[in-house]
Amino acid sequence: YQRRVHGDLTAREKEIELLRDQLSERGSHHEAEYKSLYKQKERLQEDYRELQKAQIQHDNELNNVQMQLVRQKEQCIQLTDQLSKLQSELQITKVERNDLQEQVEKFVGGSDPIIARVKEIMSGVYYDVSDQIDPQTSYSGESILSILLATIKQQTLKS
Image 1: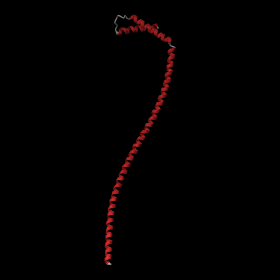
Image 2 (image 1 turned 45 degrees about the horizontal axis):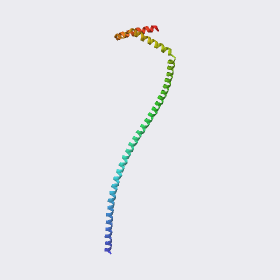
Image 3 (image 1 turned 90 degrees about the horizontal axis):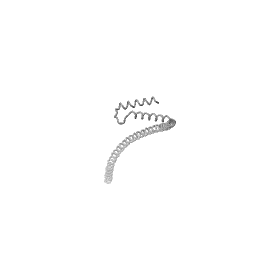
Image 4 (image 1 turned 90 degrees about the vertical axis):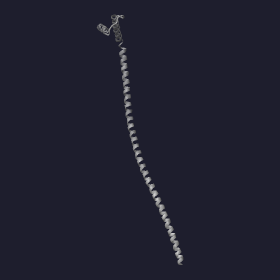
């Protein structure tokens, strides 16, 4: 009986030893797996921090672009207003130009006697100057100016 109990004890001790070895192996395996998972967790946390930084940078860039868009929209509105004002001013200027053109046409149309009188005076000046200048003679600039001055005075007194 003792042999049997001793054999059972030895078998059980071997079984316990085997279970301890398996437990130790599993413990080592689980510890290695834990370390691997812990490292993976640390890498994932670092990746997450980098993604957060990238998200913040992206958000900042997006805000800058949105602010630029707002400024450009404001500029567009200002330029549109300026364009409208300039178009209005252009329209007013066109109307004023047309009014002035009509006034000039009325003035020129009613001043035919004045134009005729100016033409007559200028013709008289030309003939008086040509009477005083000999085409065969060379004159200095001073002499020509003196002849013109005397002729214009004479014509002005006649008129």
